[in-house]
Amino acid sequence: MKLIKPKFWDKNYLTFQSILLYPFTFIIDVKNLLTSFKKPIKYPQIKTICVGNIYIGGTGKTPLVDFIAKSFNKKFKTAIIKKKYRSHLDEKKLLEKNNKVFFYNDREVSLAQAIKKKFELVIFDDGLQDKKIEYDLKIVCFNSSVLAGNELRIPSGPLREKLNNLNKYEAIFINGKLKNKKFLNKIKQINPKIKIFNAEYISKNFNKYKKNNYLTFSGIGNPISFINTLKKYKIKYKSNLVYPDHYNYSKLDIDRIKKIAYKKNLKILTTEKDFCRIPSRYRKNINFLKIELKIKKIKEFKKFITKYL
Image 1 (cartoon, one colour):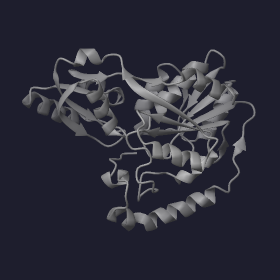
Image 2: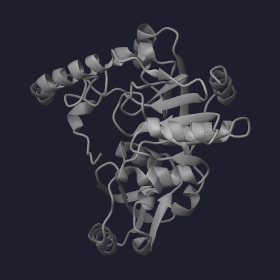
Image 3: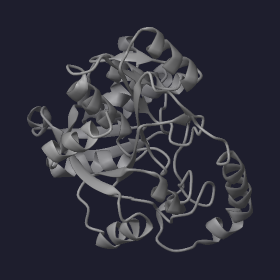
Image 4: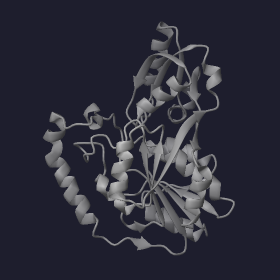
């Protein structure tokens, strides 16, 4: 999805734009209600974990999917399922570095292929709103910098479904430092049994970028998370460009970025996902910050997942 999120989505109060768009949100709510009556299909031949979100984009699903797959691939023959979108080829490439990835237009087709090839465990990168499949474990990801935004559904807000639907899921996973305790209390009121886990992004190559000034750019769901990471590691950025989520960079885009950097005497730095979306012939003099997911209480998290396998 080519999306730059409107700023009013993440306000903690009702805005004029939210109210104006609410009739369209109501239509989507009705559609979601109708699809919720469909009975999902259970696949006993294989174990299924879905890592998804209800906040659209930028919640850290893909790194978590990669971590779970790598953690259990010695015990189970493990694969990843990701629905095929051309704009998601960057995430597919990142996941394929360590895993077998099924990438079809229909998740059920991917699942059938995984079963046919005798995989024992599949992790879905997204798919909580796909009600055709009954997953063994469902994990909802949030980014700590935005959480649930204004808590309204698209297009009035950033949510794919109501926050109250957390009562249907087994765990939530919050990426980044969580300072909003009210949000946790609200989640526990919705679902007292839900497990809450936390992680932070860490970089292992940040030291090489601390000596220069940078022009930074990104086309990710939550561009503020990239800025927060730069601040965390005291990387000096003097100019920052934001593109739509999953943006595919053209020669014209890269020429513009390099021209601005040259004029301001800046080096260029982006995210690994964005770097993957730049055609290889245009990557010269563009650096990327490599990040990994550091999960708190990692033993407890692995033990929790094992209960469902």
